[in-house]
Length: 55
Image (cartoon, rainbow, N blue to C red; front, side, top):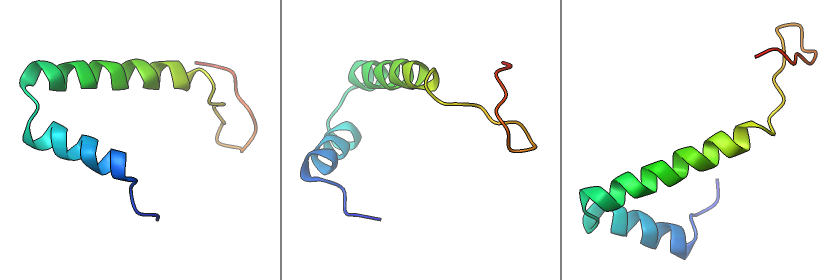
């Protein structure tokens, strides 16, 4: 695995050392919103290895 970029390390340091609870909540909300958006583009496979469009 590659080394995290400078900005990723800087963001992680800020969130773990300086951010208050409202900043952490906002970061969490934004991350969950992005994951919900990205989930729409992931194809779900069934157990036999084929595609399955059921929810």
